[in-house]
View 1 (cartoon, rainbow, N blue to C red):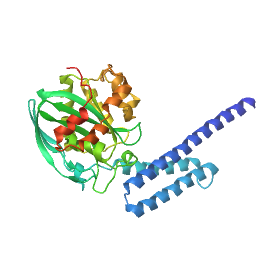
View 2 (view 1 turned 180 degrees about the horizontal axis):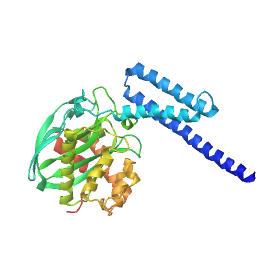
View 3 (view 1 turned 90 degrees about the vertical axis):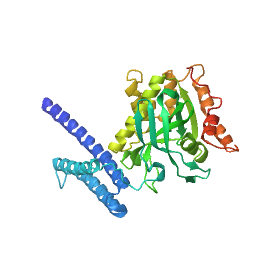
View 4 (view 1 turned 60 degrees about the vertical axis):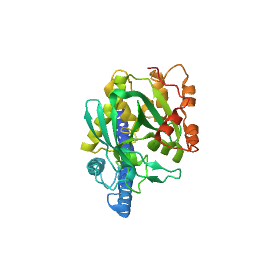
Length: 352
């Protein structure tokens, strides 16, 4: 009798644990389904909200029936819910990114290029003329670059959501040519705004923007008043060239096959890391600071990519460009070269 009681107890304990796991799964998966429906609105604003309400009632009913053990058996409860969740997954993963939406002008064009050896011709380089009030005049350019004239790489971090989260841009310095910035961004539609939550649920396609610093950096420091830092990193010319070509490879991939932006796994920082790792797979260990992108400069400092002649605190002080960018507004002659020069003033450059 004692042995039988022990077996029954362990069986009941195990089943209770499984029941608890299933209940937690129902709760978490229902939150995910409802959030996906809220963001995607597959049946329009009203229809999608009605469906969310139906799902909530359905999930609560499954949990209620499951806990009280009446109307349907436990096994049927699990099968019923899993089938419904499978349908939701099939719908969600059938959502395909597109190239032909009514895009916001900032991301309306795709980067294109021709290459002849080290000579690169870039088409659709963005160089909008921004005003301090956020208005702009559209301007897309064709530019020519010689990769043999690459002389530096800068990591630019723009903080818009506290110290943990920053947008990451990479700027390439050339001899006798204006710097060029690459930025991995959401490709938003007209009248659409960025949403970190929406970025988890396939709301935005991925975009690669090549732009002038007076455009893409100025908008953050002078128009949006984000906190912007510019860090010149120590890389060889071969590494700088390889990273530049990785961006061109990414532009090829996005032109051929659109991709979804993901707030966590496919964003401005993680994709830069993926490209850099393709160049030096053994030198870039994965780190939590690639997700908490605001701490990327600290990560670079630990990798000795930022000079240890200065502390990381000193680097943040020197790299902060907002005060210098504000002075640019007082310049009588304003142009791209002046802006790039003033935001670099006082920042030590890597030794060649």
